[in-house]
Image (tube, rainbow, N blue to C red):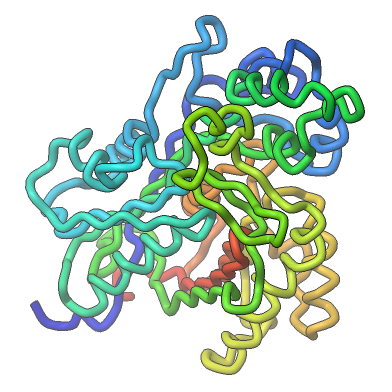
Length: 383
């Protein structure tokens, strides 16, 4: 194959499992730690602005209705699966350590042989998968590439995952009835869902496509410590010890596999490290200008960060008025690496886009502070 010159998102799809879950019903699905309602829940929900979200859990039986791979496959089935050359799948919480998430999705789909790649990380895992698909098409290595972002975060949010720790750390819990806030608050932030894009070397013949102009992904791990993590724990000196360095008996006692976050470090650093630095690069390398952007799609873990992000943009002379912002956080929740896929799918299907519209997508992750910016242009069949 030869270089195609351009790559286009020609169709989008999203899958959200089961009925929406309202704020007052979360603990009915996830359970209560040590049988007690969370004292952090109302504070976190008031700040994050999420009203409903989805879980791959049957609220009646408590059983899972979908694996992560099955969620992803359901999203992909909304696309044309003829002649797939590449399947690139990103997630932060695969169903197993091995085999990779991507090949499990391939197995669920049962489509003919193709190149499969899995991208790891947290929220940036999905945009990393999309960049792989984009580059495969752009370089002529593929004509039809599928990219996905998916999460089944609920598996790590169930109260049963914390019960052993709450029993083991009785003395601490008597002084502070909550499991450490960096663990508990994420139970009200994360939810399940999957999204998928078909990336091709030509725009669709009817309707709009999204030309991928560029995707920048920038890690600040060379200068920033770990902020969000799972499958390990922080040592006293701040270094991260992985799960294999703990005895199996400690995995439950310390909630080693629970998702944790250093909230203080998050609040201090997230905007500058994941948006400010990538923005400087994009302005320098791509002549990015605010007045040329028609839509801004920020993946925000919480509405709490809307104003700090807007304030930073104003200070950086990169103002985008509120009417240009598009997010569905309130109704779809924070689905991690799937969020940008689910957001773009809703906007793409909304009939609000027109030929020539320029979209700037922002995907941060706080794992060790990675920021992603993506520029898209809505085009017709002529490209």
